[in-house]
Length: 468
Image (cartoon, rainbow, N blue to C red; front, side):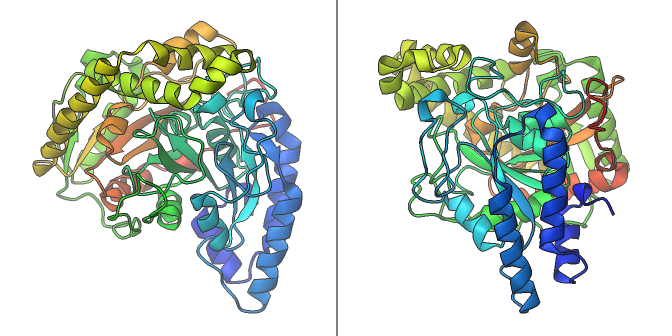
């Protein structure tokens, strides 16, 4: 049994049945990380001592017949904008290099209470906005399918570590697509839950009204399990919803027979023309859902460019508000990419920001109304497979070619799932979107597709440094 590819669900079954030791599991993943992460840079701060401490505690509790929760003995990692008490939360930036967290983030509290084994802090783009930068104190994460390629971001280490078999699950954040982008690039499952479903307390903000905390895993079932753990109302997070609750696994296994699926095809064929291999992958996935009994038809919403402009105006304005003092006092301590992207917010007029927030409400209301005629929507996530990480022009070009930002604007749950591979072996993906708080339904659709295709059974070969 190769412990690197255990799912959360399978690991829990083995651990609870005393067929696997938490210490044995942790040691196997620690060994894998030590052998391979020098090539991928998924971890910004690897914490094997803490992991073994957690694993020994979990093992002792199992021997006493104590079961702490649904992650008991299972390793996980945190994007390094999420606080873990006693460790630095650096946001991959020189500015916060010595920023030691005084308390756990709300999601960290939930994962620890559930019995998770903490493996470390994972690479991110600087302040979740900078892009893969080589002028920071730590190198950028790389794609496990081909280390010469970009792994997506800004939850870059979370995507790379999960795909590489370093962790069965990781936490990321998503403001304009930053969970779903690395999920797309790395061939894993990543969700931006409904806005307000998961607390953001203890997470360094990028844009207050667009930020979400999400999970990356290798399977749909695992993703639903993770969101069930971290979901819930938090009165200390002003954006937390009183409707926030778990139940994401409630509909797994029910199939898609009779479900109404609307395909937002104009996003990736007319508004922005996707790479032909990506389009073919999405179209094949839609046909598979139809073969499984779903009622599929194309639907139309506002042009992708309008969604992106709305997201960009709000994001850059709110991000500059967070960083204004540091941008005035320490601009030289930012990497070039983060500094450039954050500075753009200084030139957005107040009137433009207010108008964007008004437009956001109108667009979101119209989008939510579409779900009176459909159950879920499907569209592209990324328009292209991963490009080379050493090609700044290609990264800038492909980073903007996405259909993720609309669902930060609407606050809808949006899940990125693998739909195959390009001819050179790089992952392809699509998004499944639902109305607010319909996570269980989109997981149901994704699980049915996953079970019918088995893309998740294919893993990268880390021994091959430069070959997909």
